[in-house]
Length: 149
Image (cartoon, helix red, strand yellow):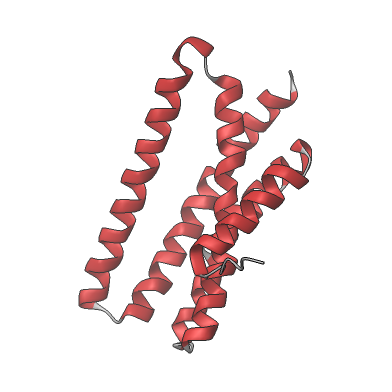
């Protein structure tokens, strides 16, 4: 038997994608969008306490399961996109996501040069939660749009 190690971020993403993409119903996925987006950030608050490597690995694993929220967003995007331009829409989505992640990494690195890494992570978690909460109203509207089909 071949054993594949599930480590940190990749393992959490795999587990989240399997559960959200293959096990949950569309309605349940929609209802879990905000909790999944919060899950992507909140476990990193544990880094404020300078956890040992094993605990940090578990925190990263759990947080990365929240990345499966992107599946819900992609499903909504596929529903709204005109089939003639769907490839371009998803290309723009993917590029925008990568740019956003890169800017977040840049901000985190810059903060960590001025503040401690733990404090920087705490501030980035707070920023992520604020963005998540601020986007809820628009995401509720897109959920209603999907439900009306």
